[in-house]
Every structure is written in structure tokens, then in C-alpha cells.
Length: 271
Image (cartoon, rainbow, N blue to C red):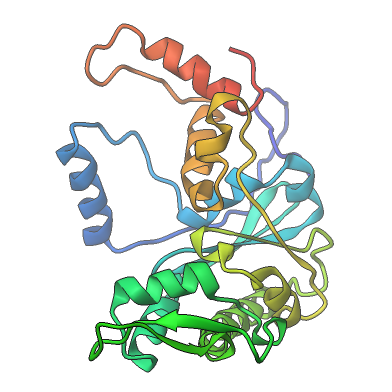
């Protein structure tokens, strides 16, 4: 039960670890991309961990909860308990697949499908009335035509329910089903689809799902408080809270320390 043994006396040290592996080529590609932008890579953190750090409090990590980050092409799942991450998984399906389904089934462009999803989509078709209509512009027509909004929402629900099923499978595989009193926190850009919170509560048996956004305060709250920024905010927190992290200027800018102090203030820390 000792989470920080540094400085304590003992005759034996034991630890349970959660190891994340990745293909060398993928890791190297990330590093090259960062370097191509003129920056130096100081370290890496798995996306599921970063998303959790972006939206969770220390208390939530202690009691046990699952964080779901619905991105564009993948959905990250992270289970936290005892103040640490205990299980991670990446589902190769995301909000972009919802857009693709809409474009394919309704025979429209990807841009039009994305517009329909954001403006009129819903993850639970039962929340939409049968008389509701939306304007749709298909590939073979320049003029928009009306269609039932419920048809659009049924397409959204089908793919989102599939994601929910995979999430439930991973929770069961972790062996912690029924041991997560903190429930499920749904974040990421894909979580902003209307009705997602209710759908996930329906898919995740015995676990209440609720929407979550990054815990950011101050001037950056409006820009960084969006659910789509959960992973980025978590990466910043991960870096700031690393005990052995050394902040160094990349381009010799003399004001870099001031920027770090400003970043710390976003999380309520002392500068």
C-alpha cells in the first residue's frame, strides 16, 4: 500500500507494474515527427494514461474507475484503482467510423456526413422523434432533400453501441467488473455526440457512465477544457508532476520558466 517508497527504510522492495509495449517503428515515427517540428522529445506516455490524468482527480484514481477516450480512429480504455493505472486497451474504432458509416449509407461526402453527425446526430435513436427531419445533400444531387433524423441517429447508435460493447468486454477481461465505484468517465472528441452518456450507461452493465472534460482553470480553461483535449492536458500534467522531470528551453527562449509556471497554474499548482 505504499505508493511512494522514496526515502523510506526497508529490507525488501516489491512492486507490481503495468508494462506498455509498442512497435519500435511506431515509436520512432512519433519521435521523428516531434523532431521535424523543431522540438526535442523528453519522454512518452501511453494515451490512455494521459487521458485519465486529464480528467481524473486523485480520489477517483484511488476508489477505482474507468476512463474512456473516444478519439477519431481509436477508443482508449484505462482502468484506475488504488491511485494507479491497472489496465489499458485500445479499440481500433472511433468517432471517425461513425462519420464513415453515415457517408457510406446515406451516399454523401465525408464533409457532409461530419456536419450531419455534429449538428443532428444522436447516439440513442430513441431520444429522437419520428417526425424530426434534417436536410441532406447526397453525392448525385446538388440540392438538399429532407430525411428522417431518426435514420441518421440509428446509424450513429449502431457504431457507438459497438464501441460500448468492446469497452464492456475489456472491463470484464480486466477482472475488475463490479469493483469500479467511480463509474466510467467518457471523454475525447467523440464523446461529444449527443446521447453518448446515456448509451454508454446502457452498454456498460452495472457501471454508471458520465461525461468528463479536462480539469483546467484560468485563462486556458475555455481552450483546453474541451473533452477533445483530455489527452493533451493529461500529458502536460504527467510532465509537470514527474519528480525527475527537468524543464529546459528548446530554442533558448528566456521566458520558458514563466511559461512553465503558467502551465502549472492551470492545474491549481504553485508557481
